Length: 204
Ligand code: TYD
Image (cartoon, rainbow, N blue to C red; front, side):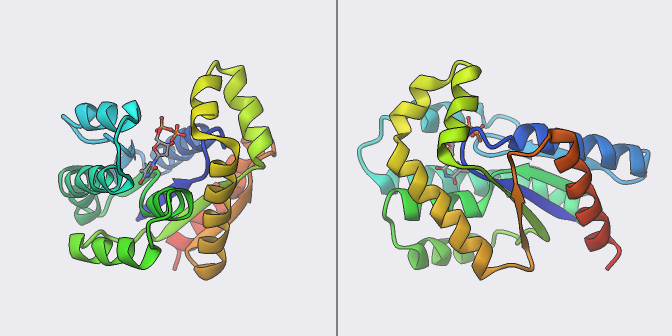
């Protein structure tokens, strides 16, 4: 089972991915492996690419896109596929929908071209995706509370509004895969909603 978490910075993905990983580990009691990972840089040896990407000093949006794709090719082959092939569960923070929302809606690269690259790379499709939706202003308040204001300001309010509308478009295009979760709710409430949706999809 391949589960992804998506949303703008500050939406609470990490908290929810951690809670879901814990609940699934308790449920499977070691009988099924549960991998909790993230992009960019979620593979052994991948921290260099994460650092290069997050430095953000590239001069062309395509350079950034290709770095995300290199990162994902390695992440998929080294970490994700071995667990899926062994009937395990993968929980990944950010994946292909982030690339579409940020690099297409955010940076203006045509989405059809990005999706062609996804096909060339044979990225596996998530079984279920949780888009944690939150207004940009609210996300900004959360990020400022944990001292990340500079980064938010660097990204820009209108950029993140475009990214959010990208996620919204994708959620409407693929409602069976992507669940929209109202992320302003209490973390424990969200976690039990998410867990029950995973239970439903794993019973099919
Ligand atoms: P990160 O520190 O992981 O942020 P967060 O905790 O919000 O996930 O930084 C990842 C950044 O990279 C984030 O701003 C989103 C961006 N990103 C893309 O632009 N495209 C992508 O394909 C991915 C995976 C991430």
